[in-house]
Image 1 (cartoon, rainbow, N blue to C red):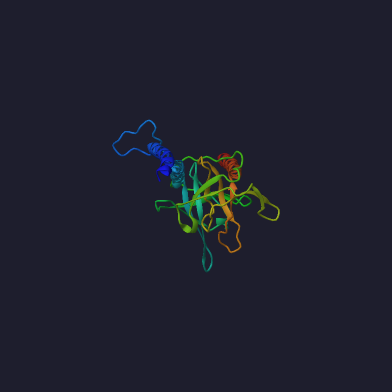
Image 2: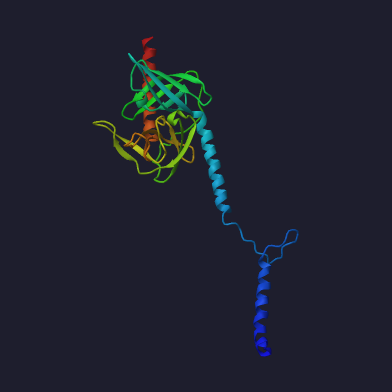
Length: 270
């Protein structure tokens, strides 16, 4: 027994030295100053938590930016025995104008267009411009002085996978904030027998009432306006389409030219 113990003893001593040396790597007890050899293990999730907090804060900033711009659109068309009703979304632009989709305004006359804001106030709007090919319409409200500034991103198209956001009134629920991404490169879609239109394909959920919702990028620039969905059942099935900001910019320019020429004609007639 003595011989065996004498051989094993050095191994036990070495093991104890290694264990005691390793204990120095553990954090010091509360109230005791850490030694110079103390090793702190950082949390593997701290960076991820910071990223999530920053992302959530940015979402809230985008919602705060869009909230005062977005309105619920209700259109009623009185017929002989009934009244047809349409609902959608609109968003404010400079000089008391509101963007929305033309398919929410199917009739030329006897339209009653009501615009509801976040505070529950109703404003009556007037249709001043329609573009059937682009599915864009402009409304004017005289009871609102001005809207917060927002810019159209009329440069290059957004890239596939880029995050996009919107605030609208799907199913009449005004103030609904939604997030998605650009799901494909711009598509050339048929909008009539002889007309085609460039549309952005998005993953943003869109329902009845989402038409006319502004779509913005991470910088808060408007990149498009929701106009349609691809569906078999009639409800949202994962694909929605938006009118690009480039098209909206062209429509605005066409309207401004028309308005300036119309005012000139009015002045000459006087």
